Structure formats: C-alpha cells, structure tokens
Image 1 (cartoon, one colour):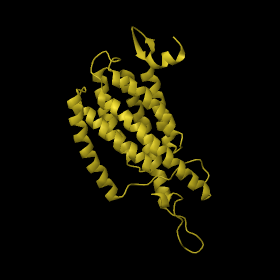
Image 2 (cartoon, rainbow, N blue to C red):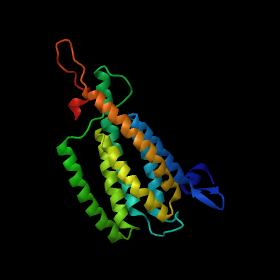
Image 3 (spheres, one colour):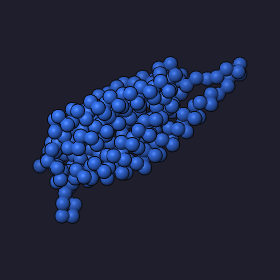
Image 4 (cartoon, rainbow, N blue to C red):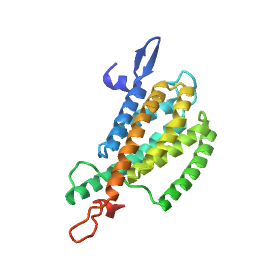
Length: 239
C-alpha cells in the first residue's frame, strides 16, 4: 500500500482495534485550521480545506464506524459547506490582509475581530432556524443517522464558519454549542477519533473566544490622532 492509498483507506492499530487514517488525519488538519483561525492567519482556510475532503470521505461512506452502517450525511454535508465557505474565507481574508498591509499594518493577520451588530445577529438566528429545519427534513428523507442532532451540527457549523469568514467574535460561541452536541452524537455513532477531537477542540474554542474578544475590545478603543479624531480599523471599509 502506497502513501496515497494509506491516507485514503488505511488504518492505525490501537490495542485490539484500529483507527481510520483519513478520520485521524482529517481531524488533525481541522485542528490546525482552528489554531490558525484563532491567530487570524489566511492559511487557516486552505489547511482546513484538506481536512474537509478527508472527513467527507469518512462520513459519506458510513463504513468506518463499528456502530452504525448508515452514512452520517449531516457530518458529510457540512464538510461540503466548509469547503465552499473555506474558498470564500480564503479570498476574503486574503483581500483584507492586503488591505491591512497597504494601510501600514503588517502583523501577518488578516483582520481585526468584531462583535456582530444586532441586525447581523438576528440574521444569524433566522438563518440558523431555517437551516436546521431544511437540514432535518433533508437528512430524514435520505436516511441519515440521527437527523435531529445531525441537523443541529450541520446548521450550527454553517453559521460558525460563516461567522469566522466575516470576523465575528460570536462564531466561537456557536462552535461551543456545536461541539456540545457533536461529541455525544459521534460517540454514539462510533466515530471515536472525531469525537475525541471535538472534545479537544473545546479547549481551543474557549481560548479562541478569549483571544478574539480581547482583540475586538482593543480595536474598539480607537487611538486618537493629533487632531482628536479616531483611527478606524484597516479592514473597516470591507465589512
């Protein structure tokens, strides 16, 4: 078995059982993406994209779980959405990074986080409710395992990823709600590496929230210029 075959369909022996290579490696890429996202680096998106491809193959097959035989289409479907938003986030953060550099800010970061406005939060809630309803009906119809919890994970993941692309601090809070349901669901379905990674994510999600919250608070304290005016954030015009 060559490296590519091992990456796609290999296994790692652990005690009396084994772990799926694409599931483990896909989650490692996902964790790397989360850490880079916390640091607001553009590389978070292409790194995450690799993990999305690997994890889609895991959940769409349904064959790597020792507990359920049906594909977890909610988990697989969110990888497709992640890939689409990753492309959007990649382009947007690259543009913001260039704008920051042109404005004299060369710290390597793509943007300055901010809290969403109340109209934006209302849009997230409405989109979340509609997304959950549509996801539940679709997942139930195609026979996915656990459509109620999978729909929650899928809809929440969509909102969180979109919020990250927009630079909203709230996206970390949405991830906490997704992880809380995701760990339980994946353990019940037998996807132990991914469930473990979700639990491990919780630490970085909490840390990421604090980091972005502090950055947003710092940016809100606009520095006064000699004439008494305030200095806007470099990416303000792109919001």
